Image 1 (cartoon, chains in turn purple, green):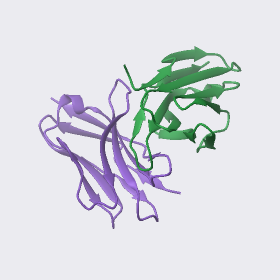
Image 2 (image 1 turned 60 degrees about the vertical axis):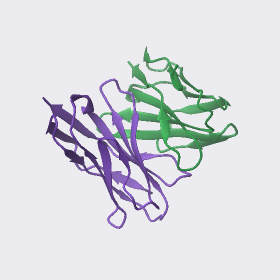
Image 3 (image 1 turned 135 degrees about the vertical axis):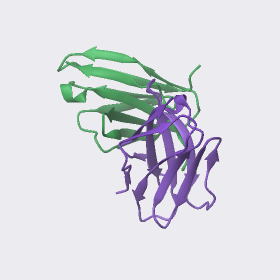
Image 4 (image 1 turned 90 degrees about the vertical axis):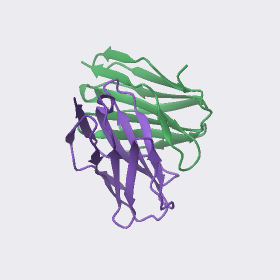
Length: 113
Length: 112
């Protein structure tokens, strides 16, 4: 079974600084999909970014980018120019495509003014 | 209007009661999911459905049942609620293979 590990339960960053959240996963498949979701205090789950494993180029969405290392099975999220509104739980998730998402346990990020 | 809606948003019930959580979507997706979120455990899959005639158990299906009434509707039932089913419940939908999942606003359920 696939597993997703987020090794940092909590992190903090100063406003305007850059922070990187770690995620590793375990799979024997070659084709799969990786996601980062954000859950602010409102509890809504919001898709941040999606990466297809067969694409070598790292996905980017505005201030959010990933460092996808397929051989190392690593999928970290970088948040640049952190804003107070980035304070949230962040979940890494994995899917083979025809399977539901498997989530990590989350990293709580606090952005400090 | 929201693409994925859940009712109720909050519910307090007593041990032994039957309760149904409902999910509706206007995204036109075939695939629907129910997850449970507990502090420190992330989201865990309860049931999922890839079309109206397809129902599959997830990681933690014991004590739960589901019904896919239509492409747009997927309900979760607790036949006899117990306190350790107190949690935040999410419905989600997705398109074809590899598609992103889109979540409803969640239902906070408390079982006393």
